[in-house]
Image (cartoon, rainbow, N blue to C red):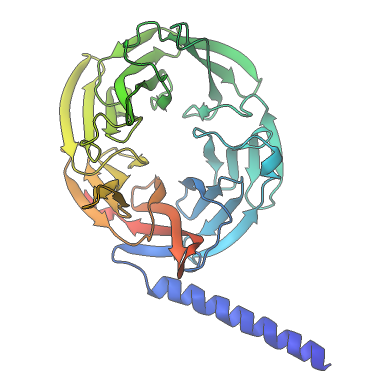
Length: 394
């Protein structure tokens, strides 16, 4: 009996401590934050890979690099469910480009260890839709019916390298079309390859935008030797180039008539040793093939960027500020900008370490940010998810 009472007492004490931590997490919110998901000691087990709101804007889905999925209720700031992935040490790890797409409020289409899967966010039941996306960078079309996978073959040194995107019908797992880009016209100084920088679908799914950044070897650093942005006609497979100077992040506006190309000096290698902390954004009229506007920022736009549903705002994370010793200190802030003018309208501060993921809600009222934050001790790393109010920033 004494042992049972002791156990019950310890359980109640643990619950009280957890509730106290949760209460502290909600009362110690930074200015502008609506809610913190998890306690101040939210240990995720791995770094963030993706972050997305449900269509009804009532929940948030967070995925770690170990395939763990956590589902949060925004009204209560409580975790609804947690689904632990397979043994990731023996599986293909998620690529930098992987799918996290909420089909409805309870079904999640995502890149899993064995391919592309649909996860029931209530029961945790998962079914593999196709193995085509296993170990490959992949993207889903806006209607959720097709996916695009990517691979690069050939010899870069011999200028025979080519990149191929394959469009698949998701329901039938059938190949629809291939889009192949050749790097034979790459700059002569690009001797270090051309990593893929960005891929974006137009809202109607009829156009696909892709970009690569050419790299060259320098005596002290890998530097940028150029970039290429391509626009693909999804129906016919025809490619046309866009002479854009920014290529790290691509996003369509105005129902696909306009393309925003954002970039940072840290994206794909510095342009020079003294020019690392800088951002550039170009807005292109795709019908006329002309650049409409160019913006520059002292904030480095090499990290994650998220756009509001109406495209009027975009959010970015900070880069680094140069210290007297020439080192870079992380900027842990989240910045919000007007897309039409490049004007900074808000700076949210509340994370302890650099933010890794950003996501706007579908109603445009909220912005979520997630990053690995040190908690009480520099060697203890925890995940922090903050939800910011952006309703009045337009």
